[in-house]
Length: 335
Ligand SMILES: NC(=O)c1ccc[n+]([C@@H]2O[C@H](COP(=O)([O-])OP(=O)(O)OC[C@H]3O[C@@H](n4cnc5c(N)ncnc54)[C@H](OP(=O)(O)O)[C@@H]3O)[C@@H](O)[C@H]2O)c1
Image (cartoon, rainbow, N blue to C red):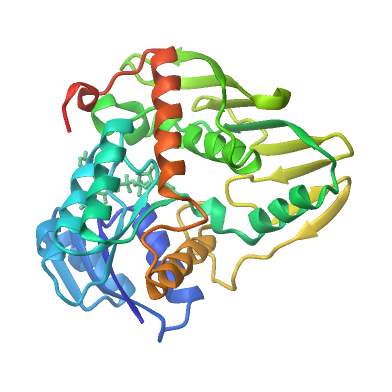
C-alpha cells in the first residue's frame, strides 16, 4: 500500500486524486493527506475526495509520518522548492512536469533524491500509457522500418490562462506543452541526443513564449519537427515515419489509439466516470501505479522516464527558451 500526500489543491491534483480513487485498488493506493496554501481550500479538497488529513501549508505535509510519497501539483516556479522540501523530509516524490524551471534546478533536485536514497519521478504521464509501450514495441520490431522522422505538434488556445500567461507563474508554452513534444521525440529516438537544435518562437507582452517551433537533428539523419502554440489549436497528433511505414498518434500526450499504416489499434482508459478537469486524466492512474511499482521494488527512478532523461528535457527546454528569449528570475540564481 502506497500512502499519498498531495501538495496543492488545484486542477491537476483534483484529476490525479480522482484517477487514484476511481481507477486503482484501495489496498494498493491511498490518499492520506492534502496540503494547500489555505486551510479552507485544503478542507474543501479533502471533503470532496474523502481525504482524512487537510493541512494549511506544505511544510505540515512534509512532516506527516503517515505519508510515503508526495504528488506535487503546484505551479512551475514552486516545483523545485516543494519537491526539495519533501525530499528533505524523507518523502518520495512524483512531481508534475516540467520537473523544475531549468537544468540547474533539475540537477540539484536529482542530486538531493540520490543523496537521500528516495524515489523521484517527473510526472511525464504519457510514458506510462499502454499506447506508448505498444509504439515502442512496433518501432523495435522493425514493422515500420528504420524510423527517420518524427513530426508532432501541440496547440491549444491557453495563453490567456493566468499560469501560462505570466512569467512569475512560470508561464509559456515551452514548459507547458513543449515538454510533451520534446519527451515524445526523445522516446522515439531513445538513447540518442540531438546533435543540432534550431528553434524560434513568439513572445507575449509579458516576455513568455506564446508559440515555439523547433527542428532537432539526431545522428543518422534522424529528424524531429516539433511545434507548440498557446494561441491556436493544432492537430495535437504525432507521426512517426519509418522507411516501411508510419505510426500516427492522435492526442499524442495521452493517447488511447495508434494508427499503424492505416490500421487502428485501441487502448481504452481505465474505467472511470470522466469528471476530470483535463483530457484523458483517468490515465494519471498509470503513472501513480508506475511510481508504486518502482517504490515497492526499491527503485529510485522510473525506467519509463529516467532522471537522465529529465535532465536532457531540462537542457532542451533551456535551449528552446534561449532561442526564443524567455528568461525566468530563477535562471540567474545559483543552486
Ligand atoms: N499532467 C497533466 O496533464 C497536467 C495538466 C495540467 C497541468 N499540469 C501541471 O500541473 C501543475 C499545476 O497545474 P494546474 O492546472 O493544476 O494549476 P492550477 O489549478 O491553476 O494551480 C495549482 C496550484 O498552484 C497553486 N497556485 C495557484 N496560483 C498560484 C499563485 N499565484 N502563486 C502560487 N501558487 C499558486 C495553488 O496551490 P494551493 O492549492 O496550495 O493554493 C493551486 O492549487 C503545473 O506544473 C502544470 O504544468 C499537468
